[in-house]
Amino acid sequence: MYICFKCIHMKVFYQGLILFFLTMALFFFESCSKLDTEQNFVGRWKFVNVTHISDSSYNEEWEFKPNGDLYIYYPAQRWINDTAITRSVGNFKVKSYKKVAISNLEGNRFILYNSTWEIVLNKKDALRIVNGDHGGLLFKEFVRK
Image 1 (cartoon, helix red, strand yellow):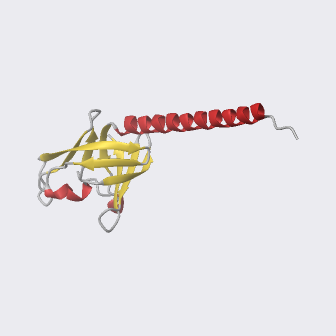
Image 2 (spheres, rainbow, N blue to C red; image 1 turned 45 degrees about the horizontal axis):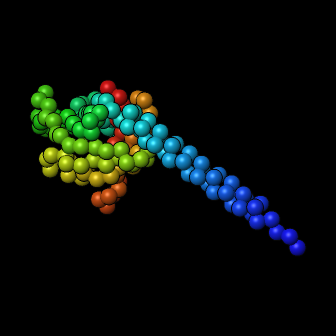
Image 3 (cartoon, rainbow, N blue to C red; image 1 turned 180 degrees about the vertical axis):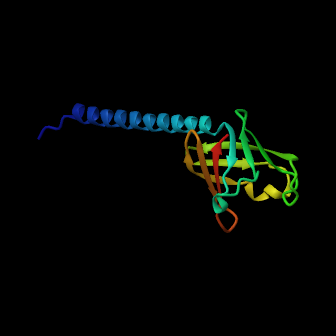
């Protein structure tokens, strides 16, 4: 019985070549979707209080800067009808098209925000993120300002 070693080596070579190109395509598409996610994040977003949708009072605005800075604007004193706005500064980094890490936020009010968030919705004019790191779900929904 004659076995063609040349044919076997060519078959293995082509299988390896196909596997290499599939792997490269996967990395390419993953990096493109991450880049799209980063581009959609940049901008200023107004928090939507979905538990009290008719409440139009100023609550929070998040601003994602292109350099990775995150600014959260919020009322200085919620219980007083005051127009003073305070800003907390931190950082963000898009880890993948489904995850964003928030870190170094100042102030005790935002201590639970310093973790990795899952991106549920990331559209041109709507953003929804969820964090489950602290024993419950912390849910934030935004519209682009």
